[in-house]
Image (cartoon, rainbow over all chains, first blue to last red; front, side, top):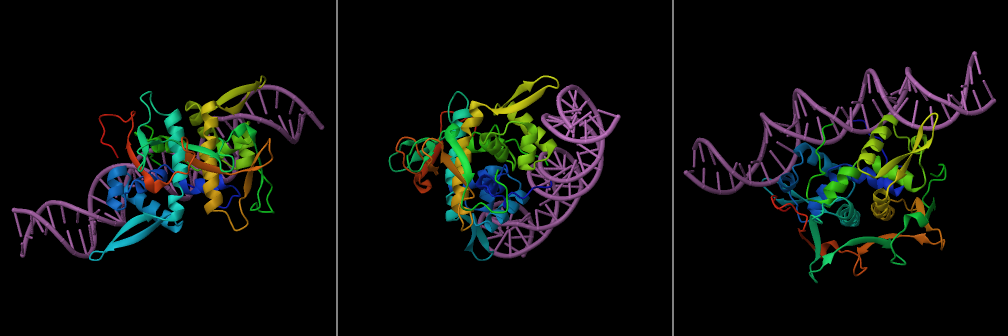
Length: 156
Length: 156
DNA sequence: TTGATTTAGTTCGTTAAAGAAACTAATATA
DNA sequence: TATATTAGTTTCTTTAACGAACTAAATCAA
């Protein structure tokens, strides 16, 4: 399909969507977070097409979300590791987990739980304001141009 | 394109991706959060194709993210309003905003700022654990089956 | 030493989604 | 009477996803 390039829009949602905004990338990231590193591991765990996975990795490497690291000679084989930038995406996935658990799970409850390794306790992601640590109430928020808004464009 | 249905997988990331996982849906939601309600308003603000927007709304209404509300007779015209379920997605967008601001913004800074209407202060979204209010450190997390994990499937 | 297995892709043909532009339809307005 | 407003629908082209088969380098098992 033809696809609009959202990466240059003055909006972090658009720019982030441009990276995450397909059906497989979040799942590839999930697998990476859960420890998967090798091409065929991703294939097996996800059921993604090989060509699709190849294309995803090449894009995500371009975007500095993954790095390709050689783990053997003869034949040369590579693992796919998250970068710091990639690991930071965990927060976005965590927000998706929370919303999915709250709004899409069956009556039985969340399909998967996140456990804090040290305490053994269940972790429930929540999005708050960094200063006040209070939930963000969308109704009480306005939007305005930030310092990085290009001066030649109309806002919103 | 052919597309794999992720909505039935035992994973909130997959299920949420299945809804949000295209390039336009997050931007349609953004506009709705910022107050846009009418079809042609979305078209003008986003530059999305009319047929694509039609398809998105029909899917998002099926999923109970939007409701279509009549605002006039003769001719019948409708507005698209977020449901509670839809409004709850703001947290996911907020996490995307934060990541985009941190990792994709130019040196100039964030393209857009969220302002708390009451205090006038800038809001910076952050993802924390609901109990401890501490950031979630992905390295210290394990995953296990939750109560809603189907019993007939292998985990991960 | 031959044939199977492992790992990591690439290639190819089919299906279907995205984009652009034109078209329809009901009504109000100039 | 002609134009504008609002909200779509239709049609055509381009391109991404899917699936299956194929390639390639090396190791392993019989």
